[in-house]
Length: 291
Image (cartoon, rainbow, N blue to C red; front, side, top):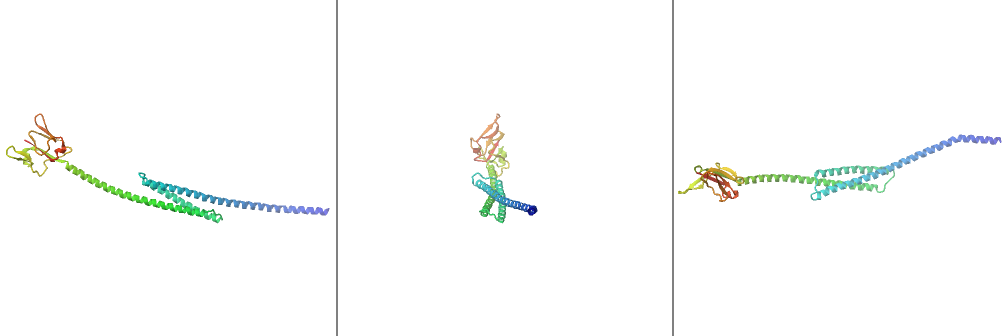
């Protein structure tokens, strides 16, 4: 009986001594498990973040490529349609916008390459990612080449426009010069001269001559200067004042192309030109004499 009691007491003591030791071991195991679980969760979260970044970059690149293509089509179509030419400034703005999208895509592709390298380090590969990056880079290069082509075309058109502008300016100057010459010639063609004077004055100046012995006839002399004549424009000259009697129109002008206006005292007040074109067709000089 005593022996059994002693053994029971020893067992109780041993149990009490062993109890704290078992508890510590279990606690350490739980802590280690939690740490490993947290580490795995962080790794999974990091991988998920990388994968999400991959798809975000791909989506952004794809959208940018679509925008670039849309602007390229806008530039091309506007240049091909008749009457649909857009201002050069607008086209330059489109090209600048394409340049910005291309630069953004280059950054996104570099980000994709960096992300792909991180995934490889984490022993995680996305099927076809490397090929996708390569294809996107190829599309980017193609778009870059298209932009350069558009920029060259625009530069060529600018040069052509500048040349055309210069040519138009030269032609305009020539036309203006010719117009000036034509106006000068037209004015010369319509310039007429007239003089109203006494027979004696006109004869002394050799503007008219008297021919014949009986009833001498007045004729136009060989005057060398029109300094004593009054200059006029046949298009504007409609009436020439006279103010004398016994008036004679010495120069040759068609009948019916003019009329002599006589006042109440039988004084010839004026010579009125009724048909300027006919009146001046035979002579650009009008000589009117009086006694």
